[in-house]
Image 1 (cartoon, one colour):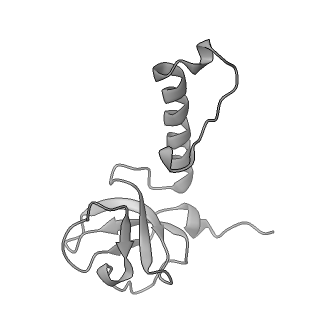
Image 2 (spheres, one colour):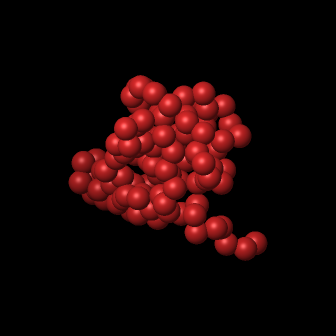
Image 3 (cartoon, rainbow, N blue to C red):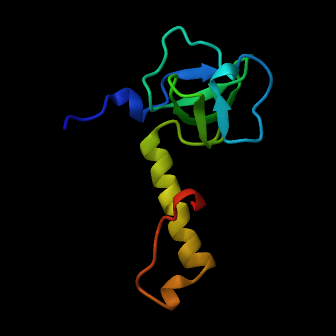
Length: 117
C-alpha cells in the first residue's frame, strides 16, 4: 500500500492536441492527442495544450484508453491535483451553505454528488 508517485499529483507533464482546438466534450480521444516523447503514467493529472503550446485544460491522462484525456478543469484550474480537489470541495460547501442554505434546515447533507460537483 505504498504511496502513489508524486507525478500523479502534479501537472508537471503536459500533453498536446495534434491539431485543432478543444472540443465541447470533456473527453478527448486518443487519436486527437500527439504522442508525447515521455508519456505520463496512466491516471496522471496533466495539462492539455494546443499545438502552439497554449494551455487549454487540466485533467487525467491514460494512453491505454480510447478516451485518453478527461477534462477536470480549464487552464485556470490548479496545476496540482490536491489544489483542484481542495477548490472543488470548497466550491461544493459554499454552494450548499451560501446558495442552498442547507445549514438553516439540517446539520447533515451530501457534500459531493459525483459528476454534479
